[in-house]
Amino acid sequence: MAKVVVKKYMVQVYAKLVISGKYTMDAREVTDDIKFVPEAYHDAVAVWIAEYEASRGE
Image (cartoon, rainbow, N blue to C red; front, side):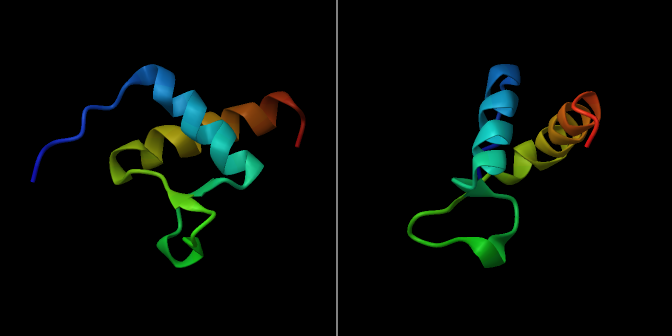
């Protein structure tokens, strides 16, 4: 299996797509309309979302 290279700019892109409901990090939520964030990005996306929500006071 090829190793996925995590690109920093894609972390924010995936995070915003998760927030908007277009992507998910839960394989059980995948549908034709909701795509799955690559596993290699899960930790970085979760951190980005947590920091984003903290900065907004949520």
